[in-house]
Length: 253
Image (tube, rainbow, N blue to C red):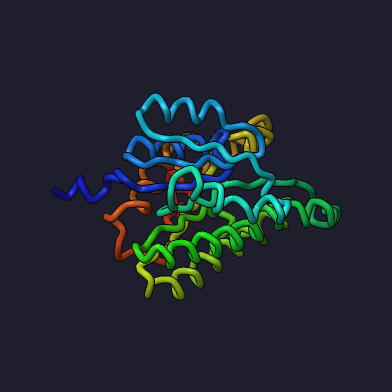
């Protein structure tokens, strides 16, 4: 049946930034579809693990600072130790720093690029090596952004890194398709998370944003679950190198 193609039983997933917000929602969504999940977070993702356990799925917690190379390099190994292998990687962890472009600091540039761009490359590389060795294909899903497609304002390092995520998605897709590994990205619109709290508190900026969204509301983390489950599942076996925008219509306006 067609719905069976969306099921993820016996699949093993890694979700970075899984302690809260979008990452937590995506990890729970994958578990609801049947996957066991390794939860990577700077802080303990205990609540996410509890929710996954309540679904009867296995949750492995991995505390790691993905901006530190030595910690990043152990993530795939630790996930394999807990789950027995990896079929799905969701590169969700990220940060944002805001300042006018003429005042933007080197420290804020480096911090954002290291997490939002470098960590995506190196985790994808390690996961892909494992998937090739396993010989059973796999899925890599990057969380991009509307700023993978637009310039934005006051977030130069975020725009640069998320634009790079779009490019990395395509080059990984090109090289890994022969191994039956599909690589795609989801580009969220304006979602209710800690990263967007300053925008939502700014009445003028919030009104400007909502005025362009045809859906008339901010997105919620759970609005992204269906897109990621689809890209993680067999239903998307012939989809690779794509960026799926989930934005309430922002890009159509």
